[in-house]
Image (cartoon, rainbow, N blue to C red):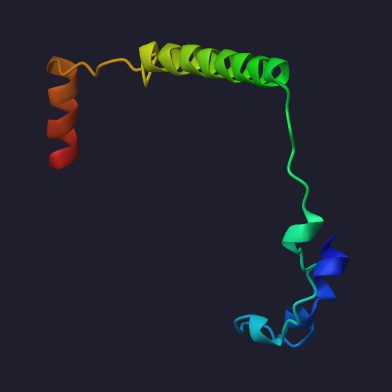
Length: 95
């Protein structure tokens, strides 16, 4: 895949450290005419089944989002102890 990228026009005209110039690219894409496109028609049964599938996916995503919201952001975080030893250490480091 990388070989293909290096053989494209912008890369062939590029030098190290320069920005790529995409104005050299010739539009080689397919032109699609409206007459070439046929609309997809679904029966009522297919529409109903598709809607049920979408609803199921949405429900599963909602469950995952809710579960993620309930988890603590830092589950193993322990609050530091600011005890006598801590303050003695600060005094030693500050001198």
